Length: 272
Image (tube, rainbow, N blue to C red; front, side, top):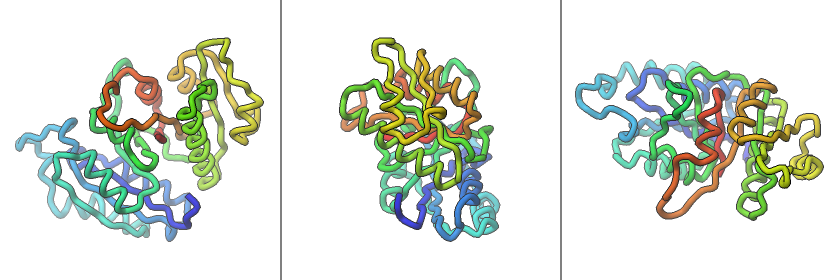
């Protein structure tokens, strides 16, 4: 993150009409020196969440679509960019390989608008991507705010194992970098259930470097606490974490990360 060049990897799904990830990458680039931003656009379809039948007109794109959707917006913004196309059925693995080859610092991934607040639809491919990416993944929502004035970092300081402690550090590091890059205010939230494991506020201040009045410690379910504080501080983006897993991922559904993402209406940056 110390490099003067920010490499942003943007996923474009040609099976949907509005490319919110690309739009957000362009908008947020305005907060920085455009000469310090390099964008790689990855065009590919997640076969697990898209209708892949030939009668889906959105799977048939022509040169005009490319020019209007990708070329013209990027050139109008004056950004340096490259484009790659993938027809691999291994959508998630293709993204990981291309992002690694590009040296991506961040992956922008479009997320469909929620249709049922009680159930969040997210393909297994996307969960695999979140848990195995080598850099943070920005989940971009169609109706989310485009500003980057308030950043909220969600941590779990009552965790005692070293993996979670290291994850907390990575979340804070990323949140600080975003806040500094965009001149945003940084807040920190820590939810807890067990009153016997109340997170020490002094330790939070010491380890995070965030002022005490911007640290929010609330009792309750993590997803509800994070959503409540995000609304209270008018957060534009939430930085959270999920522990990466190797080998076969046995359980993806029903975990804390999924509930937190499902409960938010703002862009979410996932660190692993």
